Image (cartoon, rainbow, N blue to C red; front, top):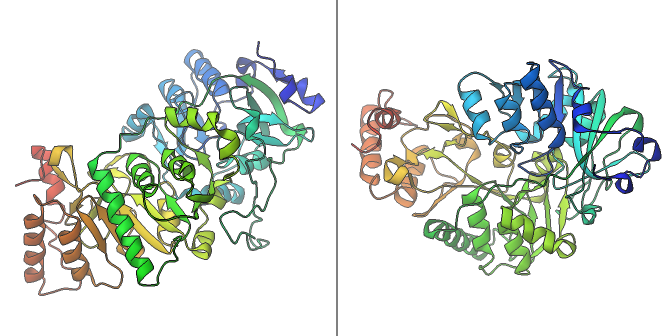
Length: 500
């Protein structure tokens, strides 16, 4: 039995220490359960595993709410036990993805900044149980999160009962890294008093009435983070294109020498682009983002960053070891906040965030698909990209120009699913180049995106489509051939390639 009494500072709560199996018995069929975690960091592990084991013997389902994606101990185990009825707001687990794309799980994809307030508004019904991973419970019952904050503050405040996992694999050096602030709701909401990326506006722990805590569980399972793809030549090219673009913006007087606060989405492409900035000329950078990946550590280690604000650490396995090995230095720069603060559109607009996110595909007019493969199969979810896209000072979407060894063009006549309309997008970047579409009409955007971003194999096909559409529609504002706009996707599903 793991001894956690030294991490449970509230004496009364020491009497509520039980096994994960016993805690799982406190969850009832059809309960709405909110768990900590944002990306595979800081997520509840022991109790979800015990709950999945119980479901194997005693079939029933719950609704599962999280901050974003969580590890296999939660999403995967509960999915394989056929224990999830409804799931939101974001996921990356392979088994869960198959389940939601087969209709076995009802999945709701939503902007991550809106989740907590929608819970408080009661839009999804009452939250029955919150399961929160912490590194320490304070004397007053407040909870010190681990490697993510996500929606945990709201789950704790709204749940009827709280189960706390004290994870001894998470170092106590995390204490003090968090800034917990939960806004009031309309009509009583006040301005969020955050003016720079480094401002602290809340508390270091999540307030919690000890009487709500029904069980305390010991856990020693570490975060199971995902490896990131190696930084290849395409990623290096994208980084250099953006460095050149930022230098031009500085020369034109539209950016200061140290840029503006940077936001970068999750995943290998976004991480590689950020990592490339470590070799760039910019210093005294600030970061206001949702996930902190290996590339952010590269920037900090290079002495380029003054502050790094996010809601979760989402490094590779090697990056997580790197973080723990140098935690006393990283904690001087890193602040972890609730996701409705880290992803808040009002703050993004106020401080002038430069948003850099990843697209699955974008079309010649500037619409972006971030979520669906061939228009129907959910990949992960919109995540925080929409929170930033509409409100950022600069909105940039990056992707490789082709996928599947060149059989898919990431630039298409029209996207198969729209997550970010042309009204919310500005700049597009592939390994081919950068298309700055600010102030351009749809046809001007189309010509520039084809010229700067499309792969040479697909440029003639895209140009042919555009000219044909212009002729057929007599130079319409947004020329489209209704019978051909999605023909590239249809051709791929039928032949395995978008090429003619």
